[in-house]
Structures are given as C-alpha cells and as structure tokens.
Image 1 (cartoon, chains in turn brown, green):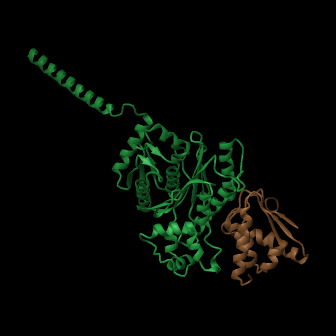
Image 2 (cartoon, rainbow over the protein chains, first blue to last red):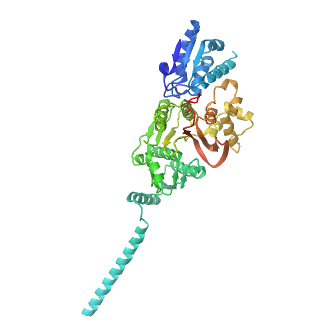
Image 3 (cartoon, rainbow over the protein chains, first blue to last red):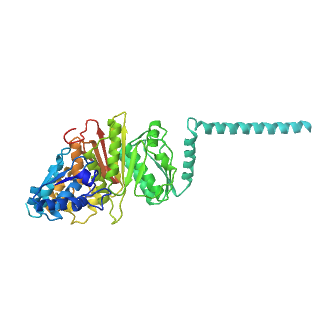
Length: 113
Length: 360
C-alpha cells in the first residue's frame, strides 16, 4: 500500500493543524489519509509506504503532527506503527530520521517504548 | 510746481524700482535653495510644511542608513516613533530625503507600516530619498504605487514586482512555494524547490499565528519580502511580524507554560539582561531538551531555523526580537537599547548554499 504525499495529498504541505494552515495541515493528512491507510495496512498485515519526495518541503510541525500524532492522538501502538510504516525520502533523508524521533518521543510519552 | 511733480514721480519710480530689486533678490535667494530638486520633490516639501503646522501630525526623520541589520538602534528607534504615532492616531510624514542606504528589510518594514496606517484611515505621507539608488530600491518595492492609493483592510497583501512582498495572517505554503520558485528562476534560470527554506518559512508563519498576539482570537500579520540581487548574485529574505516578540510572548504566558518551566530550571529570568542568553538557548535547542516529555513535540521551530544556517542551507542568518539582536552565523548576541516590538528574521541564499540534503 502506498501514499505519495505530493500526488495523494498536496505538493505544498502546510503547518501543524487546520487552524494554522491555509494549505494542507499535518492534522488533515493524518486524519484523512495516513491513519486510515495505516490501520488498513495493519489489518491486512501489509506495509504502508509513504513517499515524501517531490513536495515543496515539509516543516517539522507538519511531520510531527502527521506521524507523532498517530501515537499521541490516534493512540496507535508504537511497535505496530514502526513495523508497518516505511518512509521514502530521497531528496530529504533527514525527514526519515525526524519521523523516527517523533514516533519514539510520542511512544515514550505513552509508555509504549 | 511742475518741477515738484516730476521730483515726486521720480522718487516714486525709484522706490518702486528698489522694491522690485529687493523682491527679485528675495525670490532668487528662495529659488537658490530649490536648485537641483525636481518639482515632485519640492511638492513633497510643501506637503511637509503642512504637516509641520498640524498639531495632529508628526514628522519622523528616518536615519540615513535605514537598515535593521547594519544600523539596528537608529532604525528601530524610528520605527518605534512611527508606531507610537499610530497608537496615538496621529498623521505621519516620514522624512526619507536624507536616506542614503535602505535595506530590503527596512523596505518591508516601511511597506507594512504604510499599509497599517492606510487600512486604519490614518494619513501616511513622506518625501523620497534624494539618493538615486535608495530611491530606485524603494520604487522597485511598489512603495510609491501604494502610497497614493487607498488600501482596503485585508488578511492578504502582495506588493511589488521586483522586490516581492507578501503578507497574511495564516500560514500560506502555496504563496511561499511560488515565491521560492520565482526567486530560484531569477538566480538559476529555472524553477527549483528549496524544501528546507519552505519549511523554515512555514515555521515562521506558524510562530506568528500562534505566538505574536496576546489577545485571543486576534491574529497579527506576518510580512515577507524576497529579492534577487543580480549584482551580488544573492537572494535576500526579510520576515517580520509586529507581534509581542519571542521573549515577551513567553513572558506573557502562564507560569505553567512548558517554556516558563524550562527557563526556570535553567535558572533564567525573562525581561532583563538574561534575554540574550535565553534567545541563544532557545535557538540552540537547549530549552527544548528540558521541556517535559509530554510537551516535547512543541518548540521545534527556532532550533530548526538555526540548524538551517549551520548546515549551509541559508547564509547570514540574523534575528531581532524584543531587545536582542542575534547574529546567528557569527554566534554573537547583543542587547539593544531600542526594543523591537515583534520579530525580524533575515537570511540570504547564495549559489553555494545547499538545496537538497544530498547536496544537489
């Protein structure tokens, strides 16, 4: 299963949540696309590949709300998310490291790591 | 009798002639002061005289080097005077005649102030720099196009065609992405994306939205100006908001706020000489490290901005907020006597700055 951020969501991702952003927020991305697709991937025992290349750029707040929010807000299991989520980010490899850090921080807060 | 009459007439004629000569000399002397000035400039000086006589007006002199980066104290002092006049609902005449150097950042400040006055129905006028280079720079920004126009109150502004200036009250990633494409097109001859600069702009816009205003439900405008200077082969960026400023924003929040608690743990007090240390620690991420784990997802914006400079995605980063001037590239922080009510961020993109993380 795949999500290509620039094609399936927006070429210009925005800020953290809908109040802040005229464009497309991390909150909207998570609630409308990432969370439902990841949930489906877990149920079908498949991997969800999220490709972040080709956008104008993703801010730290967008990434944290999108991915960290899976655990903080959607209360997903950290280990399940880690096992089933794969990030592709060739233009900006640091996005992958940032997302791992946000997932880990969120997991620690929830006592899941 | 006839002789007397002739004498009287002669005397009258002499007197009239003498008066004419005095009057002609007076006019010559007056005109000598106007030699070399255009009619347009002279008309501004006449307008200025009217402001001098009006008790509800203020004439504010702008320093000859109008730049927040190179002449922060005098420039911020002038800005604060204009802000005070705005608070008192006074008309303002901005004396730009003596300006020899005006930076792109100062231009965005002037534009934002002009819009603020005009949208609130307050008279905003001024003359223009006699220095041709400064005059051209101001003209390229669209300043004079809007000075004589009515400007409607809006959330969204776009000014200038050579110096691009945009403003809004919300985060607008589409606008900034378009601006970066335009700038890169001028520098490289083709449109490029700058993901990290885009991220930086999103963080700055979001910070303005979330922290610039202390009044609930009231949002402040952010102003962004970008310009490609062909001579220097550099893209200049200036971002400003007239909110409360980074430090004052934290200071005004409750003591239960995560930043307040973190600063307390570091033994730092806001509102005094430690403001310099506080800004440095906010940018270094040292405050963020101490923030309690359940709020650790907050406070990423400022360290990210500094990281962009360190990793060569941007150059020459400078931040002015409240009473602190941070030259981030040189790692020097200074206290300012004249405090800026807001946050000003300046950086440059040069040809040798990285665009993507794989160095392409």
